[in-house]
Length: 293
Image (cartoon, rainbow, N blue to C red; front, side, top):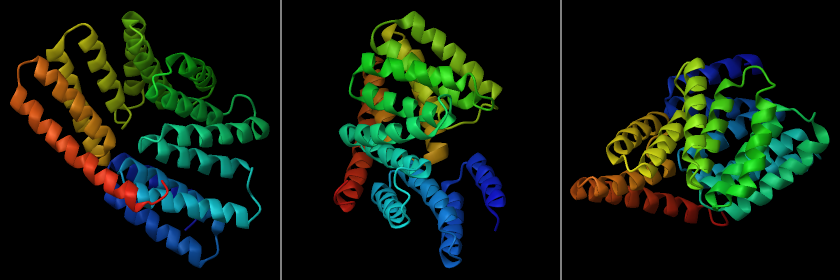
């Protein structure tokens, strides 16, 4: 199957939101690419699998494909290339999502060093890297370090066509940053712009869950816990519809439990905490299965 046809089918499967169909398609096409010696196509498909397994919380599988792909780059003498940097970014995403920010930051910075040498200044992939690096700093509570990366990402994306959802996600990240430093008005401005962009792109995107979650944070800052509970419930539904009950789902469940405690619903809060703990236990087992994650 030609690369263009595969990409079109991938886009359709992503839009459908069924990770099982997507996984089956990627594994089949990767096997065919291996059989026919199309190793460059195999790298593309492996990167897609890395991302899928990361979102599903299957960190051992994600790490395995990441390591295999890195070995292939070394074997082909392609380390330090743009495709290699893309894979490094995907590897960093594994570590960030698995709660390993130091390892994630090291890989992001290694990738950034490559891309800044190889690509034009305003390239989509550089914007994506700045966005992801900002998330590591936000996870670590380093808002001041995150801010320049977010602003850089947004300035690049706004100059590029076809980046509506990416701009929306960047506005969401900026809203999260401003909310956590107590600048609620600025957070609400970025949430409004992010929502407008998501809607302009069609409204169905897994990152919309993050916008809803940040909206809940803003409501909590205003002590509007009823609205916060509604937004978090919506965020959980969006996240589950795309990726099932992954780590992000568990974190949102814990946040909703805190809100429900404030709303006087301790039993519902307790049930959510138990579910979140069960998800974390399963994910931790998968991390341990991955060995040196």
